[in-house]
Length: 156
Image 1 (cartoon, rainbow, N blue to C red):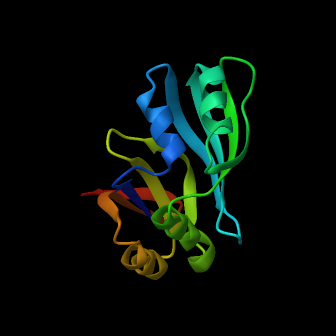
Image 2 (image 1 turned 60 degrees about the vertical axis):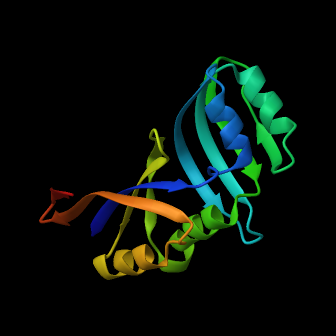
């Protein structure tokens, strides 16, 4: 099995509602614990957020690209979001289903985008890299392979 860690970014951001969350200093976007693209092209996210969850609820409930959400009442927790992703994000996360790779979680935020580790066989990962939508800017951060029960790393 091989793993590739990438930093990805999209001009204009990953989702209009996510831009609101990112711009608000009272909200801390910890990580994404689950991402699924449904057959209808919508996205399901399980997002770990901290801070002003009342404001999170306002942003998500009032946003036209968010179909539904569940925001906990307490000051930190996992937030469920069902929304309409931008086309390049939908295409990117659909690669897991179409190619049988795994996006390891948690997925974390960086200053410029998301840090994502993809795992699968080497040939499949090469195909996936070549099929990442051109709207997505990517930087290869690390390549790892599992050999005889031990993890070996190559940093780029």
